[in-house]
Length: 270
Image (cartoon, rainbow, N blue to C red; front, side, top):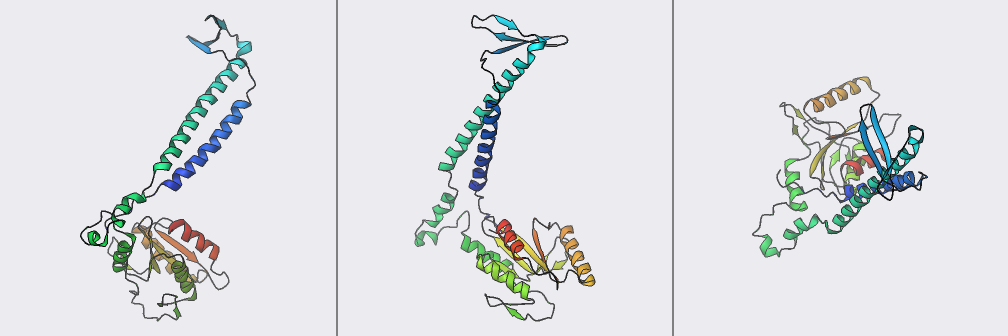
């Protein structure tokens, strides 16, 4: 599918500002902890066996620092280092904050969205609208393709039949968060094999397809063996678990962890 959405990096930039603020506070504390009043510049000359350090006097002459007094120079140089780092951090923070005031990635898509309906009818947008992209995605990820004969016993809020109560819970959560999904679509892997993941889901913001497999009998030996084989097939085909695929699990004694499910939905799909 063409027309991938332009990523909005405002969240990452705001997180960067927060990290810079922490570094600024740490640097200020470290600089303030150095107790020294001498503001004279440190001068250095190289010798065969090391360096010699001097402090520049008001008249421009140099005061040689003996080894016994080198700690004073260390503190001056360390303080000067902190001050330069602090200046760099403050400058970087200011530039990012200034950029954020002007940064509006949605304005690119708004060029099309703000057209009249008459003009929209004549224009093919460079970046498809969410609605058109979702529509095309659904057509390419049709649900109900698994030929396995068992008929679904549970009906989702969207009206489709699924095979388990947990799959209904998952489907209804996807609907709650307005995440486009298809149940048991057909996926042809790059090695030619065909699989039917429990769900294909679309992150509308990034326009990335994520697959979700629910393992409902993880303590059943044969079931677990087949499930691991299936996950291995996905990984061989380049569908990375925790990257392109999410897994949820349960057993008779271990119920579906809803906090984990919602955490993964927010992390990968919103």
